[in-house]
Every structure is written in C-alpha cells, then in structure tokens.
Amino acid sequence: MKGPLVALVGPTAVGKTELSIELALRMDAEVVSCDSMQIYRHMDIGTAKPSLAERRGVPHHLIDIVDPGEAFNVAKYQDLARRAIDDILARGKLPLLVGGTGLYLRAVTTDYLFPMPEANWEVRENLRRQAGEIGVRGLYEKLREVDSVAAGRIHPNDLRRITRALEVYILTGRPISKLQEGHEGRVFHYDPTVTICLTRNRANLYARINARVDRMMEMGLVDEVRWLLEHGNRRALTSGQATGYKELTYYMDGLCTLDEAVNLIKRNTRRYAKRQITWFKKEPGVTWVNLDMFRNFSEAVENIQHLLEGKLDDMKNR
Image (cartoon, rainbow, N blue to C red; front, top):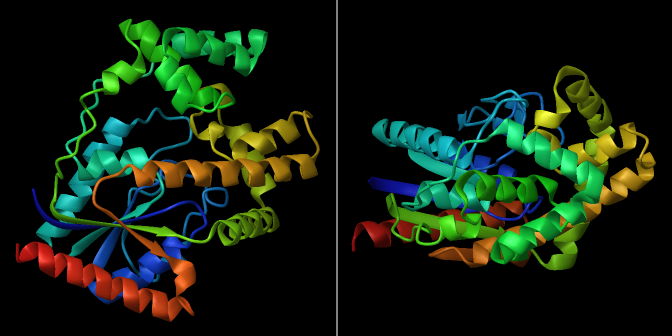
C-alpha cells in the first residue's frame, strides 16, 4: 500500500500523547491509536486516554470503540486500523499511529498474519478456575510444560497472557509460539513507513510513571474501577487485566490495602514499560529519540518534526 505512515511509539508515560497532538497540528495529521486498552469505553483515567480538550481538535481514531466486556483481538485491530489509515490517506492527510502496544504496531505496519483461534470462553473460564485452585504460578507451570518458548516471553504473574497461550494450545494442539513462527511480518504494509520510538533516561521515565499513577488516583481512578466492576462481568473482561484496574480490584476485594494497590500499580507499570522498550528494540526500521536530550517541549517537537519530514522526503525520493 502507498503511504506515507508515521508511527510514534514508546513506553508508557514517556510523553507520546502531548507530542503526537502537537505534531498532528503542525503536519496536518490524524491520530490512529495504537493502544490495546484505549479502545475500551469508560476506561479513561487508568488508560491515560486524552480528553476531547487535550486532543485540541485533532481527530483520533480507534479510541472508545468497544465496551469493556466485548471480545476484541489483534486481528480485529489490524483490520480497523488499516481502514482508518487508508481513509486518512485517501483524504490527503497524514496518518499518525500513536501508542505503546508493540503487537498492534507490528500488525498495522507489516504483513503480519494471525492464524490464532477466536476466544473460547468455556476454555478460558475453565483455565481461570484452575488458576483459582492452583494459583497463577501453577497455571504458568502448565504452560511451561507445553510451550516453554511462550512461557519465557510471559511474566509468571500475567494471568491473561498465560490463559490465552494455554487456550490456543488446547484449541489447536499447537504451541502459540509455533503458530507465530513464520508470521512475524517484516515487509512493510505501507510505503513509506517511518517509526519513531520515544524514550527517556530510565530514572526519569520511572519518576514520570510514579507521578502519573499519583495523578490518576487524584483524578478518581478508584471510582472508575468501582463503576466498571458494578457494570460488567469481571470474569470476561480482558480490560480488567489492565494495569491499574487489576490492582485496584484486589483492593476492592479486600486482598490488599489501597496504599499496597497503588504501589503495585507503580511497580507493574514500570515493569510494563521495560517490556515495551524490549519489544520495540526488536522492531525493524525504528529510529530512537531520547526526549531528555531536549531542553523543553518546543525543542523536542521541532526536532522530531524535522526528523520525520526529512525521513519522509528521503523515502519518497528513493
């Protein structure tokens, strides 16, 4: 497909949202969300979803498109994102793919294929019951027995991904890692495609994460989670496994104090940021930009805009 497509990715709390909106205003672009949790309605605070005021009139696509209890997968995202991008290109504007979900980035920018089976809620419920009986670590050990490669990529406490990997094995008889082999697309779907990954010095990034969690609590994250639990089936919520929501559910179930839940959110968010950085390091054609190298926000925007425009011109003139 003819582009251009610009992707602005990076770890959580690095500063993608504000920067992307300013770039969109300057470059006549529209934002396509590349965030696996901002797709859900009613999950605003905990996903750091930009408000309408913060978007400053810039169109944002693939935000608030499904309810928290609805089934959603990467293949659906790939289809919807590419439709949005194609529409933006057809109108003569620049699509700006923004977020931190690495698999979503790969699904859109490369010819990545998804041979995975649809969710089977009976299988999932059975696996979750097993987790209740033998613990998440016990379920993780079951995954190690059938798919050590996938187990090596998944955190032992990540119930959602452990469950999905076991579900795929049960439904297909093949390890999820094997199904993914040979489908890691490296041919870009849009030409030209420019991917910028934002980063910061580790200590600064972690401080920003901690501060953002504190702001989320002040904004009413506890009330947001309480409302979601009262209006949805938590057992069927992929969204309920999102960092921030999961830990506050522990608190509301009396499994920990509020302070303990907040500290867990901060810790788990820092760990997630580290995994994001590791993922993006494996992506093809990524240009890394450390935002801490700039004196202020304006300087960062100007330099990244210049970088993007230069790369797009170079690729068009190949």
